[in-house]
Amino acid sequence: MRIGDLSLHPISDGTFVARPAYFGLDPADDPRPDVFDRHGGAWLPIGCFLVRTGNRVVLVDAGLGPEAQDGGTQLLVGGQLLTGLHALGVAPAEVTDVVCTHLHADHVGWLFDLGARPVFARATIWFGAADHPHFVTGPGEMAPHIARGFTDPAHAARLRPVDRETAVAPGVTALPAPGHTPGHLCLVLSSGDERVLLLGDAVTCPVQLDEPTWRSIGDVDPALARRTRERLWRELEGGRTVGVGSHFPELRHGRVLAGTGRRWVT
Image 1 (cartoon, rainbow, N blue to C red):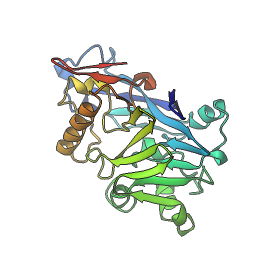
Image 2 (image 1 turned 180 degrees about the vertical axis):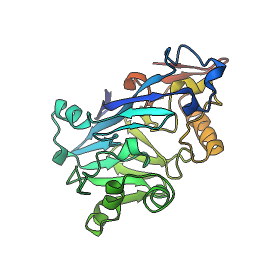
Image 3 (image 1 turned 60 degrees about the vertical axis):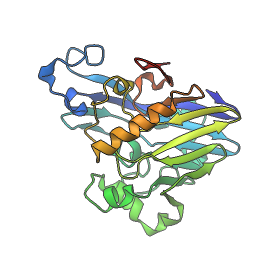
Image 4 (image 1 turned 90 degrees about the horizontal axis):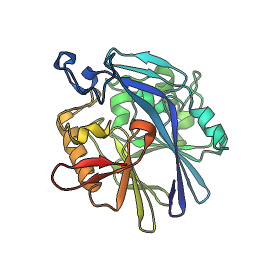
């Protein structure tokens, strides 16, 4: 996808199967068959995005890594990101920036290997400042080798915590969008009069447009997360901006068709 002078390529690191309880639903309530299969799973991607802008190669989110996790409410299987980058002709050493929309496991898995060494050896790592005390040193879950990577003094110079609207690269801006996590970020890609909003997990799935009470079990502050979702939906109503989330089906972008009975269109 072209956004003026920028290019955007979605890459799936693997599969995310969300069960009704992930969205705060009771399976006994017969959730929507257009969302959940006969086994009660909504099959979604673990999405990452590659942005080329000028001489910068920006990776948005770092997937789950070569892991599989079954948390009961969701099943995640990763491991495909590096293969996807290779298919685009990009080696890990060519990535100049990695922007993590937040620090959940399925967005940081390829940041560091099991020895806490950077996978993207030359990249600056951007992330929401408020996520660091929650996940790296606080109560949030984080794999030990990822936490060691964040706290290793040798990596300090390449870490960029973000607490306000911040230009990451030409045409790439990080915006705070808290609720799912304390420091969740969205990314705005803009060039000329074209604009794309990378939603991360601020919106898990487009179905939340017509099911506004469906939350994500990972929401640290569900009330704030819902307000953030509504703000983002309104931003996608104007027609100028298209958006895509990290777990949107097929990683397809779309917009909100405004008016009575708003709906998501791709």
